[in-house]
Length: 349
Image (tube, rainbow, N blue to C red; front, side):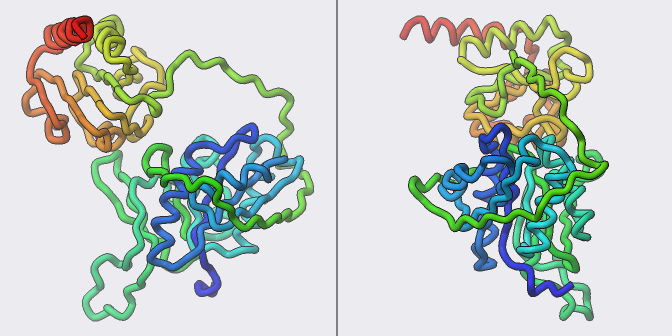
């Protein structure tokens, strides 16, 4: 493999029902940042059927070029045709870096494509940087240290440690990133990108799944990733019924209730409300951590909140290490009193 042939930072621009997912814009923002020290171009790869019109929105969020793979076989997501499309783009255009969202689609597509193009994949990255690898040169082997590598950082061993991984000998360097981890850039209205239409040809085979029907479930759960104020509860809340006091606080503030993994595992709240390494990454203006100890797995999903307010009876709980404000005490007394005072303040305005 001639590594010098591989240039540019590519993003898989996920779309569903001809609507670009927010993760695509987040990854374009990160790609723009990574491309700067490499003096590289940012390319979005748009795969679907009848999706060419979406190219302009990708340009506004940082894409210099949009490669469009448009074919009727790509109308709905299926592993085989989508993997064929993205792997063909990689083989043809040779990106140095390939970023994919760690969504339900990306978690299926990324590993399949990385295997086909014979490269590595680092999953669920929380930080990406351009730098030297190894991070510290091996004594006597300083000349072997490689520069301008994609350094991919992710939690490892159940979140108990952080690993920085590189792929120095293969290209592209591939990573998946969870929604909410990276930030979008400010869109440039009216920006245009070079649009390249590419179709590798699709011949259905025994690995093509036939979709008989698509049934969309009606969601009655708010998307916590969009919330400006989150009132999050952990095991310390005590029971599903006791979440009522958190719901009352959220109602007064115009916020949304979320929770930790322990709450989901106990069956008190649905998975859609879980914050953390195995849940969702959130960035609200205000995050209440109530009855949450502050394990690293949970903190990974909310530490970028603007203001963190912790309420816990254990003064040594790790959550206080990341909180901007902390209250030590019984949440059953503190939360209702806080709710009552806020309600009174609002009524007096």
